[in-house]
Amino acid sequence: MKIGIIGAGQIGGTLTRRLRALGHEVAVSNSRSPETLSDLVKETGATAVWAKDAAADADLVIVSIPQKNVPDLADGIVDARKPDAPVIETNNYYPQQRDGEIAGIEDGQVESAWVAEQIGAPVFKVFNGIWWKHLLEKGTPSGTPGRIALPIAGADGPGRALVSDVVDELGFEPVDSGPISESWRQQPGTPLYGKDFDAEKTREALAEASPERTAEWTARSA
Image (cartoon, rainbow, N blue to C red; front, side, top):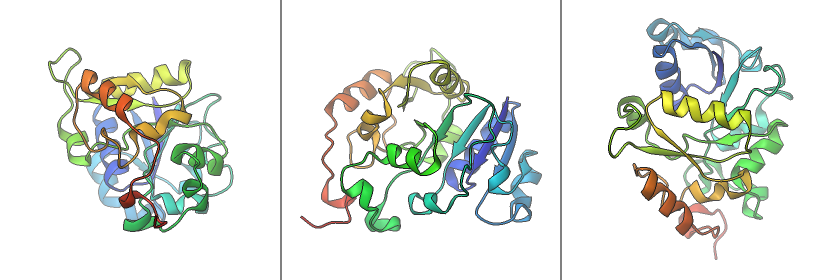
């Protein structure tokens, strides 16, 4: 499968490594020039490209960048992907820690819906709550007791099926966490975020989540 990755940080870089190890063709980009990714290219055999070219003819696109940088992406950044190819976004909104205030999100827009609006394409939210080192090292075969589960928010259909297959191939149990409108259930500050739960506990944590932002995860004081 041909996969385009926009962002080569901890999650984007880890997914580049894992997906290349599984034999996928990966085009990876960062906010700078392709030459700055020479070490990752040498390590993995991925192809470094400009961000505007990462989605070209891709079967799957992954956007993994700081939330505050999403509006800086080129217009139509994912438009050159294959028809109906799913787009994953792994982002988190860290208002106090990194991103500053994003008014749309603070006013109540779901983080992933905001990303989808910015890039002009529907998205699936996954990989946002797992520590990169566990993503790199803790995948296990399907059926392994206690296998770490990863929630997937997004629309039903072939795109979800493909994203679920990728999660499973990487060694994690895919769990349907509902449509993008429900993706707040896996945002920072929820019972699931940052946890390595199995499928049962993941579903329980999703059900327990509240859409209210806690003090740590808002740019606006009470």
